Image 1: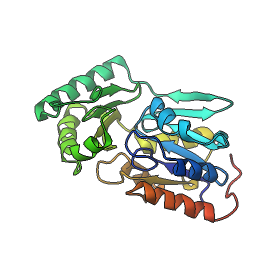
Image 2 (image 1 turned 30 degrees about the horizontal axis):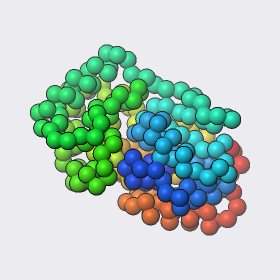
Image 3 (image 1 turned 120 degrees about the vertical axis):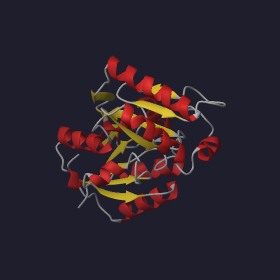
Length: 253
């Protein structure tokens, strides 16, 4: 039996960089009465605060909610307040190498042209993220920028030989997430499991980027039970199914 439900954020619980809707907030609150819930994303802590925490009802049991920003290279836990348990911060040398390679690659492909809504390259401390139109781009613009992933696949192909010490994953609607090699969502969940004392068999993961090069793919490759979801509505349906199973399945948390 699974005791922990793990969710990606963008494209799974919410539209890209948008807050979860009221229905999702209510479903997650009910789910926390049945299972511990982990949310893992390429986004940084401010996105979790804006998209998730600010939209959960006051009655949500936050002691059973665990947050893993930047592909799990950070871990936040609630103990009267949210505290950072760990963060695998990149060195200045690593940051410089990533920035240089990214700037060269996006200029070579011409994906730095046109309007942007915020910086295209964002330093998240433990991860550098490229966003094709900037983090704050309108959702409609994001959806139309790279719907077939070709732009980011080409960018990834240019970056990989330049950055052999790093992992490069496609995520969200317009993003590439760059971390130290081996630091991905599978790593993040494995480290989380070790810290809190659970097994990977206790978890079931829901994500929209379970495709070649997608930033959810390592989770499945690591042997964690994975449920691909293509729409927010599919995630809601899955949560309703779990809740309908009845009483809490675990008292571990």
